[in-house]
Length: 288
Image (cartoon, rainbow, N blue to C red):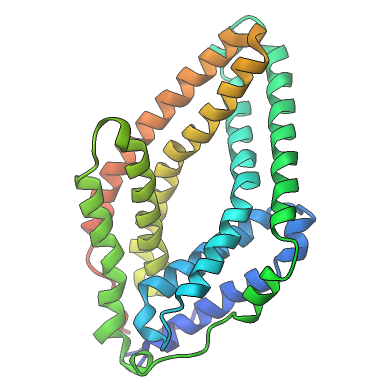
């Protein structure tokens, strides 16, 4: 990994990162449409990293790239449902192997029902994704990557600007975590918090080895809060199964209770991890 110096500019640090993930997005459409292993996940991650970095470090480009960020959001959204079902399906199948679930009558038949349901839902999601990605919209997005309109601010020594910009989403995440509402508004607020923690993660990830500790801490935050988010998708799948396969209701109820338990534990742990990550020193990019 390239080491930064006291003379490194914001462009020196961010351009390789932006080019790397832009290349992943540009090359992703064919493998995404073919549903090749890990293709949707890789494309969605690269898309989110680009959009987040363009927002966090927007003074480094002459354009705010609002429309480009909107198009990256569109692409990530088109990929989201198939990937979410892939993750949640694997999680539910793991829980079904838990001795507590296996002890419930009909667990074996329920497992087959679950596999069929997730497979059917994912096939439907893939069809919708392919329909959304038909036409020329993706080609226009790919042609706009990577953005090359670097501003004069991009030539400023990184320690004078980039370090401060990197800290903004971390501060925002700490504030959101401290003010999470109770009741019906909490799930939506928790979802927004997770998006902010992803921005904090990608902001420091873009800085490379200079912010390795911060990147590792925020990665743990996003993965932990992700369990809480996955819980909502899992519960929607189980709600469908309770309607469509009521003979296995005891199994669905057991799964639902275990998902809820895991999601609540992830929320508690995730909020504590936010406090830990946001207390780390601001990343420095000028000490080599």
